[in-house]
Each structure stands twice: as structure tokens, then as C-alpha cells.
Length: 72
Image (cartoon, rainbow, N blue to C red):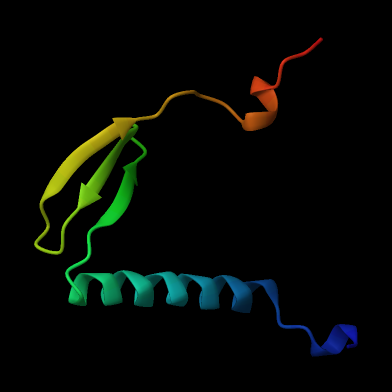
């Protein structure tokens, strides 16, 4: 496969967003709850297809995983 045959980064992002959107629509149509993370409040919610939200948990740590690794 040559470099010219690759798709652009923008196309990959567009396809990924479309795949996520389709999966969320599918779960809503099948009445399956989804898990949503609210960045402002840092709370994890379980959202039902009718729009109701139930808090499931809170974010445990701040920062990146590499910052949590124990330094000996």
C-alpha cells in the first residue's frame, strides 16, 4: 500500500464520529442505556432512551495515567 492510497486524518475522524453517532442512535432505538461522562461536573451518568439520567460514579483521579505511575 502506497502513501497515496491512505485516507486523510480528517476522513478517519469523520468516519469515527459517524460510527459513534450511529451506535448511539441504535442503542436509543433498542432502548439500551448508554454511559455518558460530564466533563464539567466530572460525574458518570447512565442515560436511558427517554432522556433520564442516573449518576453512576465520580471521576477517581485527575491527570494522565503516566502521571500516576509510582516513581521509584
